[in-house]
Image (cartoon, rainbow, N blue to C red; front, side, top):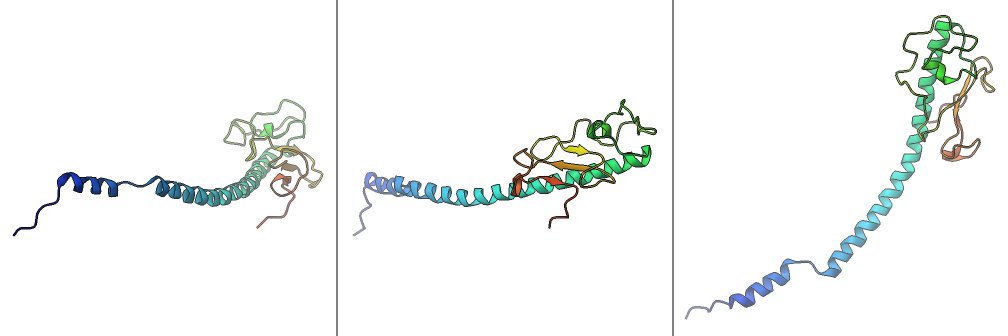
Amino acid sequence: MPTPLPDPSTRSARVRRRAGFSLIEIMAVVVIMALLMGLVGANVLGRLDVARVETTRGQIKNLESALAFYQMDNGRFPTTEQGLAALIVRPTSAPEPRNYKPGGYLASKTAPKDAWGEIFQYQAPGTHNPESFDIWSYGANAQPGGSETDADIGNWEAEAG
């Protein structure tokens, strides 16, 4: 005698019950994902601060190079009053540059900013570099002094590494 086929309405009910996830299972997955994102997020944010410091150091190196070209063309560095804007626009205050490069010394036509969006500080002659200039960023807190990512970053520092 042939085996009777199961009632289709009962079979589909069992399949439907097995096809989805329970609320407990979904909540467990969400909790696990939140924990993983918390761990990853903390590591990424820590690296972001380090990346900003390194980016600012690189920007200072680029400004040093532009100032060296300015000095080669004009026989001196811009004064503190002329500032880093002298790399973008020909200074009109004394001492005026002798051989200012048309177009300036930076590709950007805006005042250079550090990785936190603050304008770099410039002093010539420098306190730390009395024969040339000081360029620095006040760091993450945009205030003099500080420690870690809030510390000032200047061209007088030894290479970090």
